[in-house]
Image (cartoon, rainbow, N blue to C red):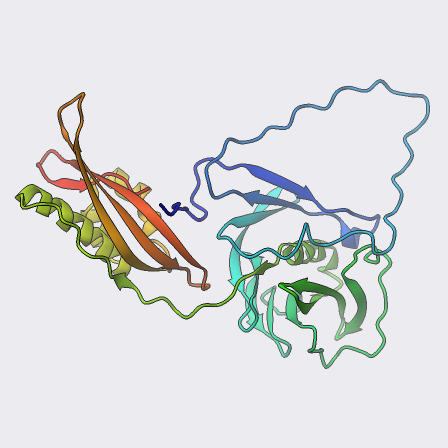
Length: 339
């Protein structure tokens, strides 16, 4: 069975906090990143550190990292797996959207307060005025504004990926080189003086968590699954009809029809994320399950539905849903869950 994943719809999350290495300069102040796991997991609470008796000698200040000793990336650029992250800046959580590069197989987690736009070199993610941004392009390309000789920011010299910097039109541009799936890319972080201290750490984290995603042809929405055999009873035929009506509503993004198949308004509200999105669905296999509860002697029915899904950003996944139905007070079978 293909594991079903609820992207960014979670009841409990495990939080992984990553604090980037920082220097004395305000420009490289560390921002904090939290990664929301897709699968519900217990929240991990750190144990308090053991108390340490004070000593007479003061603790020496940590040594500055040596040049080219720190990597921007936790590991190799990962292949996107459908998970999402949030940035935490000054103790405030900043939600993000997964936004792909328009021509390269790369993507970033862009804060919802920013925009994606196109520049001469390619796709950029940044502020609405297009003065502060992160841009990614193939290493073989080069900005027309980039000088032959680059300057160097000593605060950023610790990063293995750091190339150098230059100034243009009142902005400071910092360049980084990285690999993804064996290919070379360049990243530029461009900031204005008034936004440099605030935005550079955010752009740096966006670069640190860049994702790799091959673009696939658009998915054709629909129901290609063979209708399962539910027997000849009128009750079972009504059960199947309710399921097919629900799946059709998801394909067509028809919320009214979707809600009509739900057991209650509360169930409809809880499952609304299946239809309140811009993803494309294609249902490929349906299995019917019928049994009798030995404790209550009541009939139990459910379906296992396999499907393909493509988000508006082009992320393709294969998933499955278990869909049980219950009989309401009017004697009509309605969908009780989709998990």
